[in-house]
Length: 413
Image (cartoon, rainbow, N blue to C red; front, side):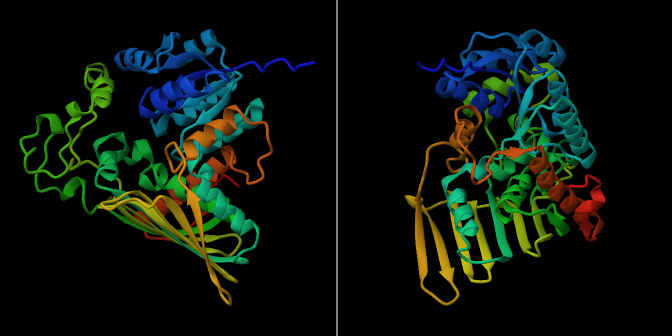
């Protein structure tokens, strides 16, 4: 007899920014609508909420109150795409309402908030997935397989350097991310992605972190500044001037809705109260003995990263391009070099979807696949906490000029 079709996941999305309305809203309904039923949208800004419902294209209830949404929509899965500092509150309330959770990274911004999430997950028996989409890119999966196969033996050290260009990097300084209290800093908000990749590839936990950080380009470094780009007198002179009106999507979602909450999407990147770093380095030692040299720069002419694993038997390296001023190669090239043998170039074709093809594969894994996960690509709350703690430790180390032990942060992971 044919099997009965599976019921669709009842999905409630909390947070109607770009990720919530786009990746988890419109795109999900259009391409995963056979396995997902959208039952509600939540945002504290009623004007943005109305625009999000139109953009998503689904006739679903909208809510400005989370508890009302959880009670009325009865979701079995809640997507959390709110500002980072609110993640713990939304996640815990969703778990306690009987739902599983998919959270955008970072899991939280402080150790105390992560502890609260882990306790709620254990107490309720429901699962938290963290959307670490880089794990799902084909190139990352191929590198993981090579490491697992012992292609270069035991990993001794890692070189990992991430570049944000002046389009992407500057955007963090226009938004709420520019404040440590809201994003945890780029060591947490952005580098959590990278620290998770390290944890996943190395299959171990970070043990010690020593870091440096500084604000060298944005914030106080500006020779002039205004409140926001739209009203700035220096628009013709500022290389970072951003015309919000030229982007119909952003203008629709943020300009008129700013009347409801005062949040503007084009705040000046040179605001003097910006307190996150734009230039960062960290040395990380893992429990396996592996040593990592990491850096993140947020004002580069290129976007992408360099990553190399140095092992007892050889080296695996990749330069992955995301945006640059020359033609992008048609595929990624992994260089596998053995200490006493020939080098090998391994080409991995580009895939559709954001984050080097990871977004689509992540959604497939979360909503379609019952297959085994041999590479362990689905990231749980513990993985989210470990990556976030590495960022918290780096931020603390840079502020206090001292070595920080991950165990000293008190999560016992």
